[in-house]
Length: 373
Image (cartoon, rainbow, N blue to C red; front, side, top):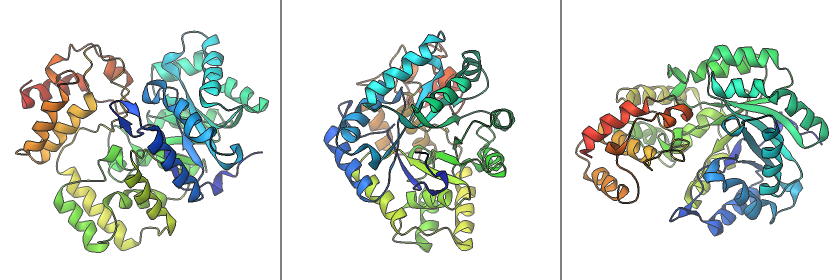
């Protein structure tokens, strides 16, 4: 049965940043989070072939599919262009995903991370748009779309040439509206003008909009002292017309509880609150930050095993708080279990997969200078 995309629950459970213990997914905590999410009347779970090194779809099976009726939830996953080397790989990967997740069909299926260059060219070369339509006709996919990290020009070209696409997933948050690389406001307007439902990723920008400089937090607390900083980011996105579902990569039960509270009795932003968000945006843009969202796509192929997002997190903190000894202590512990910034050999694999198009090689040189190793 087709799903009414206009009536989807606003909060989606992203399975990209699940809680871990010593690098292993904390299954018991994930089960509790899944149960709380479903008990709140929410249904949208989002995973992908590559999340958690291929373990996310398996965890969806163990924590969700095996423990709850199939009709009680919807499951989304994605086809990774970078794993496709020949046309037969598309079907092979899809069947592997069905097996991993323990389902007979996916409610939502996306071509993962479309952008200019290799990813888009691969999907075109191997007829993945036509393949998706065929799978939908077979009932193996209920709704077909794609996630997007490219330019507004490419987005316009795709959605105008592919009416079979039912929804699009984009990065959108109040800080990235004017980001010259992400150009999220332009992407949003293109989809809104065409009435294409949107799934929003990175609404809290990988956690960057959950904790910020004290001056910015004080602006929010002055208006809603009882609300979390993260709730402002979620309410901003949820207040926008055309948004189908907002993905939150919740990493622990506290984040889950806070997000559920935000949507339990949802209040759209008032004009006064939107003005506060705009002032906070101006304040945050005063301090240049590395726009890493900690997706960790760069980590799996790093030959030096550098935890690149954690290095950037350290640098961002030091840019705002140069004397923060805790950040330097964090980095000292980090390099006991992963590579140092100075270990970077500039191979470029990380830059090839970064959805934010960050100049990672140059940033790692800067990090090595700041951190001294």
